[in-house]
Amino acid sequence: MVLHSVVLHDAVVLGRFARQVVPFLCLGAAAGYASLGGLRRVPAVTAVALAMAMMAVNLAPLVAQRFPADVSREWTTQFGPLAYDRTLDGPQGIAGEETSRYVALNVEPNVMPWPVLGLRDVVREGTLVESYPHPLAWPAAQYEGFTQAGRAALRARPYRMELWRRGASTSTTRTLPPS
Image (cartoon, rainbow, N blue to C red; front, side):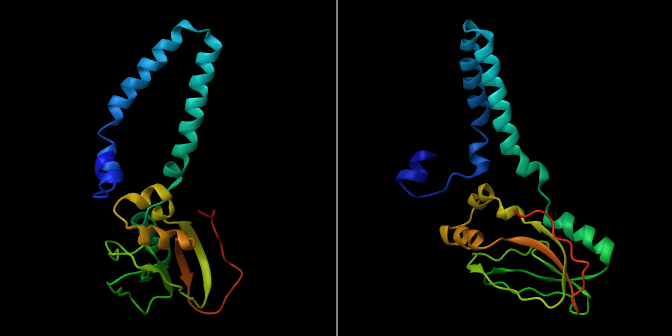
């Protein structure tokens, strides 16, 4: 993996390749932990506590993540038919139901522009009803096939799933935690 990604610049190391190595890394970590048995208990317990704390911090974004299909289904159930749009810029167009009172950004199923050329500004008239971080806003997910230009585009501004109600602004806006 190192030869192809770092030396030859032929391919990136994707999660689906790295996951194959995880069992061997676990065995290596277990061997290292077993060697701590000769030490006093306090350093061993401290090492395990630190490892568990690091694991909790690294897994928190994954556990709290909401995915576009689930968010779209929830919004459709709660608010009725949606019009769809996206902020990713690419060669494919997007068609939505223009008669809908609500517009959902970045949740349309199976519509990912490839290659990602950038993020476009979408100015919406109306009220932002709900907003969630998009799974691609998590930097680790951006290495699963995106080019350097695509990753830079996703990191340029917040990339979020948003639901907008068309029409005059009201005070019923609810914004959820930032990405």
